[in-house]
Image 1 (cartoon, helix red, strand yellow):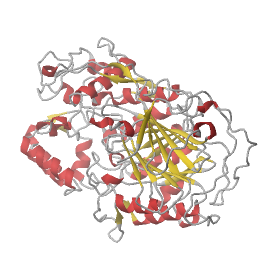
Image 2: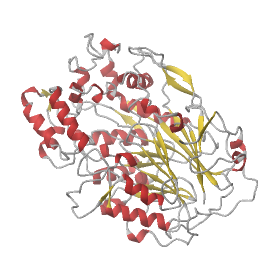
Image 3: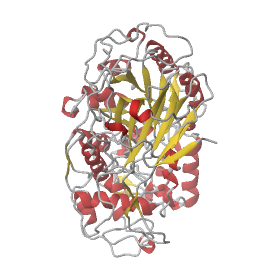
Image 4: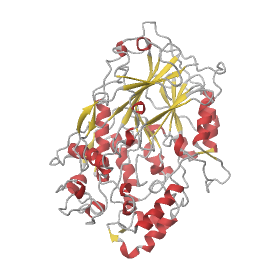
Length: 594
């Protein structure tokens, strides 16, 4: 069993200390042979080709890199306000709809499976990196014709009653990140934000526009189709779905969901995002790559249906179960079963207003949208993606986390379809070369999929000769490189932290819950050199800036963001399983340096 120790603050006041030694000069030239800015957070993306990585200086076999730690700027006091160390959204026990309030924060758990925790480390530590991870925002056009809400016929949790508020919730999360003054452990400035995929939900162009505007800053109108009338499940009049504006006793109001006159008008009203004040990087997920996150591009009927004038709201339970099974087992990567289901229910389709903005976007369009100068915000241009990604048809890259730490963003999606992930042979070879070239630096790997959600993969019909690699394959590769500190990801919508100690070199896998399912969290990550032969990865969860307690009479931007959290809690009858265990939340993760 993992050896864990629960503490509120393992070593109080430690983050106020600075390194008393004279500063050590940092590298000015990377192993790749390219000059970079000394400013942490400035984008530095390498081409995913053989030419990008020159041989790095040799290091002693079997040891982690001996990285000289420079004297940091004097840190601020550890900043816990707005984090789950201070308080968390909670609700009283009960069988019906429950209102949220503020509860006590979660303690930090020290996890020392790969390396023993040594006393006094807080007084010795030097900060190597401090940043924020967002994941699974699922910015959603809830009126999109290809929403699969009809799966709720057989699967009650297949539809989310709060989906119309994803933009409001994402803006409130941006506001929280902007309000964080420093790292909650080290007091060091937060240098950047990284998203780990499923930034959109339907692979729709309007969702991509909303997501980029939320993070870069600007005004968003989270509406599509007819601007005067809502045309989604929330206004369908069907008892199956929550009807917030109606007095009808639908299945959700029978559970205590509120009647909120004017909700749909408020939910589709223009809102403003301040945009992130930190540089930010984007990692691709399955919902950003393929139809509904499950089906590959290529079927003309589904492509036309996405922007068309018909929408399906109900099917039989048996039909819903068959479609869900095909999604689960990946047996229908092109969505032909969905196409046939829509055709079989041609008489049951309801009219909606067609909208070209709902069209699917391709990987090329995804990269190009990030490179749009209007989306740069605080930078970097492309948010990790480069012109090389466009030229080579890739969505993976590297970036500079700090002078001593490299970030690697992977594309773990199966572009041909299926809900599971994998990595292609070309990318796997690129990753091996990159890790080798930067063997004298620490490395943080970012992806959407987790090791558990990447089973042995099918062949990609577009690249039939290319091998696809599983999560187990990726774990084995990362474990062969002593410079890998952590693999940081999302996808499962659950907090889970795993120590991988089976290979030659241990490292941590940090999986963070989504921002569409309760508990709606992001994660602050701080990497420190403890100067005692160990590193520590400190993870601290944060909620959005929306208040825990809702006012159902407040349908303004902030009120709706608070309601977004409360509805998500009640959508799954108050289940808290996605929180994970205490050691999966606020933690200090020890790792040997050598």
